[in-house]
Every structure is written in structure tokens, then in C-alpha cells.
Length: 203
Length: 350
Image (cartoon, rainbow over all chains, first blue to last red):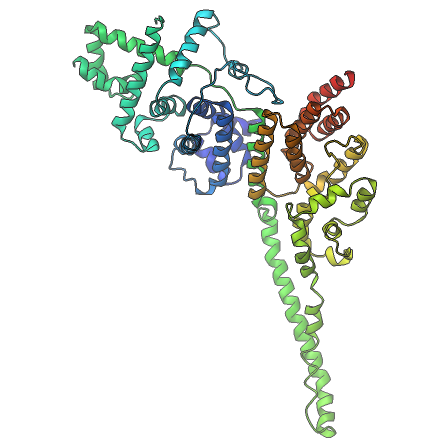
């Protein structure tokens, strides 16, 4: 059994998805564990709210399950799943017509049986080299600056970071030109840099 | 390369997508231009501090729900046809049945022809007209007429659908009497009882194995409903709940994944959570009760729904109900047993 699991974890996403198409649920579990944090991280940062991110995350994987027979291994799995997630997130934003940004140390849900906070979740795998107060202040300032980015810039910024896609793949996913993607990223980086410097932070 | 060109290529460079020649030229410029070098350093600093941070994770409840749906969907097609021996045996069985029918008809034809010969002779001798061939096609007829239990199932179909009302019927008729009826009757007869029809004979229901199994598993959620009504603290004892859970587990685990159920479930769970968030505990309780009424024991989402319902009871001050629900959770889900027992201890102390 452990041999099988080890082999599965070494497989590429596309091979895992192909196996799940053939009803190998263990392959799906590996995919879910592999994309759990990056995909949720993207949705949380893009949508700005944990509850919405949870909903869209769930909808995305339900869609992956439903549409698995349509998946073609030639397509990069990361691009496929992030496209589903991004489209659903865009729909969600359009429906709501606004976005709210929460602070990471806010309680997720006081009634939730799991009862943890966002920081608890984030801290799970964090080796935390930046435990001092200054690093914390920097993170908070950065969160705020990221939250103030226009949606289009924020979208490409986090897609680039979390999906591991190339600029060309992001352009295809977001249905804009590659130059537009580069331009949005450049503006995003410039804004973040300027914000932090204006607040007194230095590298 | 000048500063403007660096601007145009900076994104490709920072994300490692600039070709080797471009990278060399850009870095050569950075060696000479302190302003650009400083800016590039600051971009890298921003990226390290933003993208390099660990991601939050979705809740265990969400992950478990996704895994449950994935598992059910993966198991759906292999429930019957996936096994190769079924693929081999099924055509053989079909051929055997068809062959049997042909043989039967052939033999019946032979017999009737044999029987006809003397009759024909006699007819030729005595009777005026050939009324004798009439009985010949008759023998196969009863064999066809013997097989109609299927329509009985179709008749029971509508009562099987979870949202068609029997939930209320079963909720209203709770307690030992209802439980005794459920245990004594074959699984398939339960919906007939709910819809007011006369209980059918077991012999009519058992033979139809393939669709019968599906129907039995689909009705299981209703048959195992339990009294967890809000405001009524005199529910069945935990022992009774435990017995029911043990009685039905094996059968109800065979429930196939149902996209309609999945969608309904996701909507109800969200509705319940929203009601909890907004302090509408009565409403949340009704939602989670509806979920539990519909989900059979062994369903992956039952533990989560039980946990929520227990929280609702706690919020509403129904201590006994909360205790029972936590005990049931401990029984149904070994993974949550520690949590459930801890909550039972805490509640018992209060």
C-alpha cells in the first residue's frame, strides 16, 4: 500500500488526473492534497474572504469531479483547475458586486466546529523564520497593499505565484494578451514596492 | 540595454522567463545602473515577502466533503459492471435465459404438435372444423404472465424520492412502534407503508435483485430517520440510536453517488452554516436535521452534519439532545470519537 502511495505522489498532475478519470480515487486524493493550499491560497487572496474562498474551492473540485471525463491529458492540469477556479471566482465577484478584505488574524467563524483562525491555519506548515514583530508588521502592510490592488492586477499576481503557470498560460487563462499580463504584473509590483517604501519599510 | 528596455523585460526577468541572451544583457545593465539594480532588488524583496508566505488551507470539513464526493463518483461505475467476472457472466446468463426460453417454446411446440397429431387425426375423422390448433400458442403465455413484479416497484418509485413528503410522515411516526415496523418489514415495503398502500408480499419484491437493491438503498435514509426534533427533549435513547445505526450500516453504505443529492447537500450545508453565523439556531437545526434525515449512516457527510446539529442543540440549551448527538457522532465516526467524547464529558460536567 505504502509503495502505491509513494508512487502516486511522484506522478505528474496530468497522470494523476488520468488515473482518477479511470476511477482511481487515491490519485484524486493526491491531487487534492497537492492543490489544497495553492488553490485555496489563490482564491482566498483573490476573493479576500475565507467563506467565499471555501465555497469556490469546493465548487471548483466538484466541477473537476463532474467534468473529469472531459479532461484531456494534453492540457496542463494546473491551468485547467485554476481556470475553473478563476472563472467561478469571477462569477462570485460579479454576483456580489463588491469585495471585502479580511485580516488574517480575524477569527474564521466563531461557530465553526473546527474553531481555528486563519493564522492557525497559516501557521500549520510555517517554519516561521520571521517571528519578530517587525516581520509581522511588514506582512500586515503587504497584506493591506495587496488587498488594495485592482482585481485584474491581483488576479494575475496570485495566479503567477500560486498556479506555477507561465506568463503565456496566464494570458490564455485570463483571455488577455501576454503583454497585458506583463503590464498588470509590472504595475502590481511597482505599487507594492512603492506602498511598502512609503510606509517606511526597506529591504 | 537602457533603463526603458529593462522596464519592458523586468517581469520576464523576475519570473525566470527571459531567454539567456536577454538575461545576460539585462544583468550587464544592472551592473552599471545602480537605480535599476536597486529597483530590481526591491521587487525581489516584495515577491519574497508576499508570494513566499505559506498559504492558508481550506477547512477539514470542505476537504472531507470533496473527498467523499470524489470517492462516491469513482465507486459509482464499478459497483457492478466494473468487475470482469460480471462482464463475462452477464452475457452467459442472458444467453442462457434466451436459450431456455427458446428451448421451452420449442419443446412446448413439439409437445403440442405431438398432442395435435392424434387430435388432428380425430378431428379428421370426427369433428367438422379445425379448432384444434388453437391451444398450440397457449403454453408460452403463462411464463410471460408470471413475471410482473417489476410494475410493483415502479409503483413504489415516487415514494422513494426523498423530497416527496414521506420525511414528514416518518418524522411524525417515530418511537418504538415505528421502529418495530421498520425492522419487521422487508426494506422495500417501507415506502409502501409510508404512502398508505398495503404492504406487499415479500415474494413479489425479492426476486428483482438488481433494481431492488437500488431502490432499497435509496429509501434507506427515510427508513432510518430518527427523532431529533427541536424542542422535544424526549428523543429515543442513545442505545436505540446505536442499534439503528448498527442495523442499517451495511445496507446504506451502498448508496450510490447522486449529483442531485450532492448539490442539495452542498446547498443545505451552506444554508445551515449561514443560519448559524447569523444566530438563527432554530433554522440551522432544521436544516441539519433535514440533512441527517436524508443521509444514510455511513455517508461521509453525516459526521459533519451531526457535529453541526450538536452545536445547534448546545446553542439552544438542549443538553440531552446535544449529548445524544455527540454520542451518535462517536459511534458513526471513529475519527471524531475523541472530539465527541470530550464534548460529552464537558457537557456532562455542566
